[in-house]
Length: 75
Image (cartoon, rainbow, N blue to C red):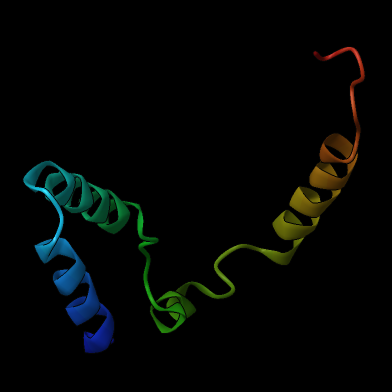
């Protein structure tokens, strides 16, 4: 974490009215909740090869057939 950014935010917060400070706090909380979450790729490696190659090929073909078409009347 860049402490110079945190320090700058704190300095700016000090001059804001109380209501605006609350808005900043709510905004930072919302940002924290929206941050992407996940696991490291190294934790997923044990699952490599878990899906049979024939199943992967079937999925690929199905996606190509069903997802690459546009239905102009859909909307």
